[in-house]
Amino acid sequence: MELYEILDKDCCSVAMTARTKDTALHELAGLAVRNPDIAPFGVDVIYQALKDREDQGSTGFGDGVALPHMRLEGLSRFLVLIAASKAGIEFDAIDRKRVHLFFLIIGPAEKVNEHVQILASISRASGPPISRRSCLLRRPAVCSTRPSCAVSRRVWTPLRPSVR
Image 1 (tube, rainbow, N blue to C red):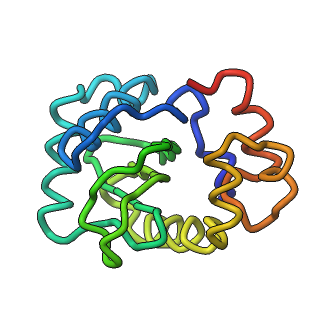
Image 2 (image 1 turned 135 degrees about the vertical axis):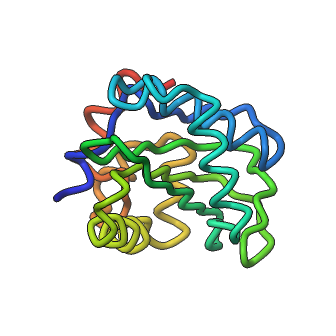
């Protein structure tokens, strides 16, 4: 399974407005419910599941990146969305730096192995800080030429016209 196959460009945003971890989780939940497979669960269910996961330990893994993730009973396929905050959000990341780039993963409860594989793929694909910075600064020409960037040519190009 390739990341671009499970990325829903209609759920992505380069203009997060959240200022706190809690409001970021709520904003991510709001983006997620734009997906027709996630919408029936509602914002409150998605938000609470994300909050419960964060209460176990922060998904902010450093260098300005967070990988919030959750599993849902009754979901048949994975959803990945990308959201960016130019200002950054305090997210209890392991390096204590603000998070600028969020990769939200929502998957079926029973597909644990695939869930872990997606987490690992995004972790590898998020690339070095210069690549992420190019994506955050909305430089798709730079971003799309870096294969290590998660917003790669196959992802960024279709995402670009409808980025919010």
